[in-house]
Image 1 (cartoon, rainbow, N blue to C red):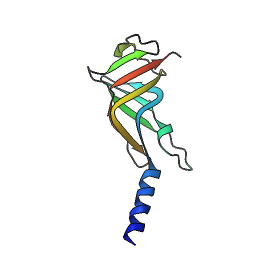
Image 2 (cartoon, rainbow, N blue to C red):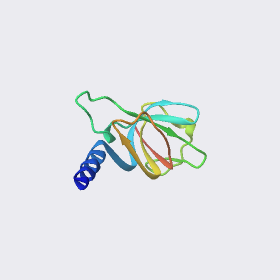
Image 3 (cartoon, rainbow, N blue to C red):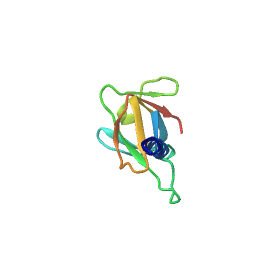
Length: 112
């Protein structure tokens, strides 16, 4: 019985969240040291299809560049830019998770 409960718990936890090293989405807003990026694709949607966003903290160590590899400053980021955000460690974003602040290792900005 304990094994059955353990297996069920594992399946439930993995079905409700996704672990990844990066996210791809649109910049919704820009604050002093962070950006808000749409991350709904990481969260399994319920029948309500709620949109999810992730707060991405940008530090002095965060590398920001274009697809071509050209360096971009934080001030050059714009709302509606599509970006890929890469993390040092895998992150987990789940349907039950409130908006998290995640620290970016690298950001690639795509041309609109």
